[in-house]
Image (cartoon, rainbow over all chains, first blue to last red):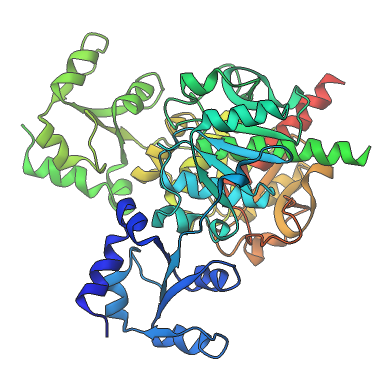
Amino acid sequence: MLSKNKIKLIRSLDQKKHRKEHNLFIVEGEKMVNELLTSSLSIREIYATRVYYEKIIKKQSLEINQVTEKELGQISQLKTPNQTLALVEIPNISTNECNTQKGLYLVLDNVQDPGNLGTIIRTANWFGVSTIFCSPDTVDAYNSKVVQATMGAIFTTQVVYTDLTEIFKNAKKHYTPIYGTSLKGENLYKKTLSENALIVMGNESKGISENTYLHIDEKILIPTFVEENVNVIESLNVGIATSIVLSEFRRQGAENRKR
Amino acid sequence: MLSKNKIKLIRSLDQKKHRKEHNLFIVEGEKMVNELLTSSLSIREIYATRVYYEKIIKKQSLEINQVTEKELGQISQLKTPNQTLALVEIPNISTNECNTQKGLYLVLDNVQDPGNLGTIIRTANWFGVSTIFCSPDTVDAYNSKVVQATMGAIFTTQVVYTDLTEIFKNAKKHYTPIYGTSLKGENLYKKTLSENALIVMGNESKGISENTYLHIDEKILIPTFVEENVNVIESLNVGIATSIVLSEFRRQGAENRKR
């Protein structure tokens, strides 16, 4: 049985300050917890209904707390609770890993929507981006909505919250170019893109902040193909824009390796 | 003042059957209603708080119903109502427009999430896709969540709900190739893509249905670039996958026109 205090603690994890205080975040649902079990993250506790309990108890050396559907409902942050919920330790990321010498990195400047951040982490994983730098005002990656939207990519992606200026300084020291999307940018498809790079994406409505914009070396634009007599929307969703840009960086990279 | 019956009618439009019955859908917020006013859609009624009322009354010949913030809250489907709400007639799309002879078309097979459909319509607009065919079991495009997520693209995009088999037959008659994403597909970046084509995208968890899959001529795959020792997620979000595929079709098209 779940104690009142335990329920209170778990429910409090919907707030960033409580996640920080306990150094814990929530992972929910069969698929996500299955993924979690294959990751290297430290699981503090797992709650499971009988259905899921019987599925995993044989495989795991972990202690699993069996709960009723009703109890799961009391601790779940989902509209439709799904068999299991785990409390996981927030990984400790050392600043040594903020090296931007080799490889492709994402930098998020004040992205606000949890769904967008989750989708960006998911897409970054697919395209082999293992570290994402976020400005301190970007939404917290251990927010449940973000975690669930990553479909498990959060378990293997390093999300580092830090002063972006430091990251840009480091990149410049290593001559790593900094790309950013801008309405004044050059056509993405016509630019020669480097796979050793930082790609900066901005806020949903305001785009890249003035301060960050000063650091951008290469301004890129995803061109529209709308017909002349048709109204075109102002911009693409930030998750969509990120995916198109990542796809093109990787496509060009593969093309170059072939030569 | 808003009558109880009017409030009831507007609130009922959160359900598809009532939207069909009244042939109306809801558009909310300053930005969206501004876009709406530049479109060719028929606006039945506009409700506005004093702030928005004073902004648009001079420009429009339309009759605008002034409401209080509280009244707007009673009819709004947003968490944070935003100055204005319009009732708009659902456009009547004739089946003549289901011709798939020239151009790039999207086909959605049982896409369920309103946010995904909205983002897909927004992205389609950016990439100059003016018609989207949806299987009858795809979420309704005039659902408020879809409408708001399109950022206005719904006003200029034709979304046609129809038996997909008919669309595929028509495409084959015109020798228009039918592309679809599949885990068994060929690398998207290595394929020669035609801008006269149908692109089929499937359900969030199940992908393209068995029936639809039989009609796919060209199976494509967005390759992953994850490093070998890192876990990779199973798939991309359907909105993300759609955008990457559209981007690559248009990039190749532009490249070919240059030659």
